[in-house]
Amino acid sequence: MITDKTSLQINPMAIKPADIAKLLRTASGQQVSESMVQAAIDSGAPVDAKGFINLVEFIAWLEKQNQR
Image (cartoon, rainbow, N blue to C red; front, side, top):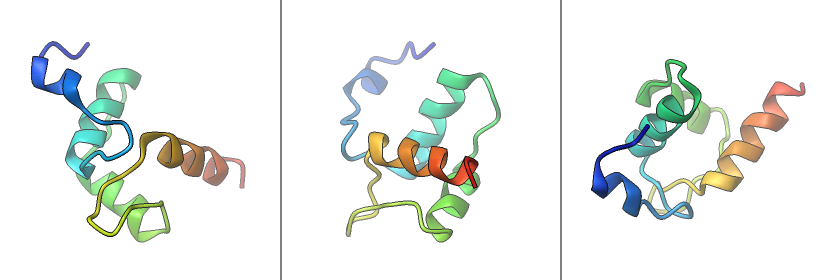
């Protein structure tokens, strides 16, 4: 559960890799590190020119990878 008020102000269309790791770790209860997110980016996960991640696009990409 995210209790930090600043965490509630995350823009789901532009999340930093460290923040998406924290969000996914909190939501799933599984270990999700920033290095895991970076590995996904290195493998082709979508990011914008500034290195931000769109949560919906990222989750869709992860799901597509899991179906392979």
